[in-house]
Length: 215
Ligand code: SAH
Image (cartoon, rainbow, N blue to C red; front, side, top):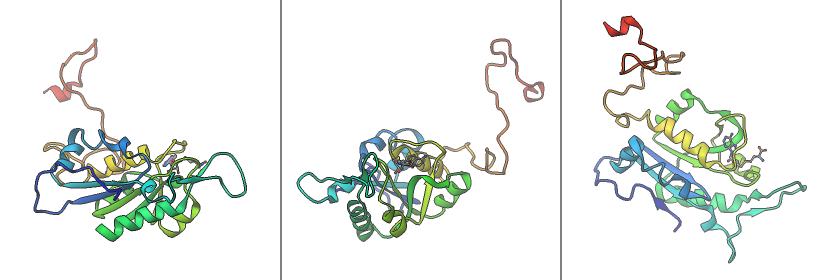
């Protein structure tokens, strides 16, 4: 009912996707161009990566389909209700199976390269995006396998954080990067940062390239 496959124009592929990503979000349009562009777009179009968004608003009761409500105990702002989020997750999993569920949250575990590698190996992940002042705590308790933060700052919603997780994770899926690009010898993969790099021209605004690289 609320389901949007973002890989609608993917080539007919007989092999299942290497990574299937379910996004639970109130603002699916955030992902549209992001998932169509560049290498990630190609991976989605070829069926290597499958992505679908599901909107909790489609599962909210009443004519106004209200998904937020004021916090118990008072305080500013609104909280995302647990029932439409839970219904969205249940609906997705009833149709396509259980996923490793991540809740995007500023108080979650800090997302890093190791976490990206772990997710890339799981095959099927779900990213649950909060909005407003956050999601009712019972979603964290009843549904989240893991809560992940992309850094010590507060975003307006989990969508951009989910995009960060998707981009870092997808490029580790075999076949996603163009040939010649490597995920083995790069920053964080061997516990170090990548060396500086140079390309043409050999002289740029008075700065050259280390002699040893030119020979
Ligand atoms: N009131 C909360 C912030 C809510 S921000 C607090 O003070 O902690 C609204 C939503 O944005 C959150 O539910 C979460 O999904 C997302 N979000 C905000 N900052 C984030 C971060 N650093 N990493 C991951 N998700 C984040």
